[in-house]
Image (cartoon, rainbow over all chains, first blue to last red; front, side, top):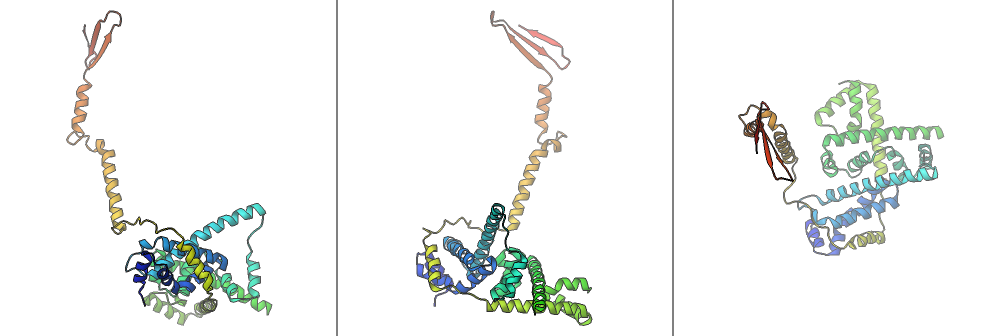
Length: 186
Length: 163
């Protein structure tokens, strides 16, 4: 089995199969990360596409000895930020034009009561800012340490702890609300 | 450790993300404070549940779609040119460079003020300027006759005329 460095080298020499082999181990990971970041599978695929294109385009800049997984995730997280920024802008335009808002919290909570796991996660993540979301997902979903998370996001470990703490606090608040609603319904 | 501080640390404690010493201190407080303990348990519950949901809610791309994503990326004509410099960027160097630039700029801006005592760089120019200021001349030429008159004024505005 070839190492990542060899696969990078071969991809740079124009071997497309090696490029596919290089990315394959992260297929599920990047999709799930993007789904949590964007909130739906269609947008997630778009983000993945953008990230894969950037990886191919800038593979030349990848430094030997660096972790390819971290580099790839960093690109994915930055692509998600860009996507969310664009989506926020277009949502504002649509809201202005059609005088129609995004789903309110109560609608989302109503959805949660019909309860699918994916919806539950989205409800919990909905209050989080993109930075808090990416920090939380890297630490609690991908299992990265605080140090590794700080390296991927390019911020200090103190900053990672702050974002993580805020994210978990917001999630707990949302989680408690959901539990209360459930009890009331029961 | 006070309850207020412990409450701030609970989200990190739930995921074992506190440094060892703080971790011990916080746990010691929890043994003595039932309200903080209750708060901690609610954090633990939400932490465990969301982790469980994150694990159970994993999705995967169908093989066809995955191949499609890769193929679309490969259509990018060629690798982008590398703009990365050969040296590694270090923040300390950037700060040192900026400090140097500011120092040089400030020397140029403040120079006349610093060397006003006429012992430094600006002294000679200032002395020349004083000498030049001691006399002023004015030349008048008649267009019709070609007569040329030069007036000299000294620093006391005493006139001397040359034809």
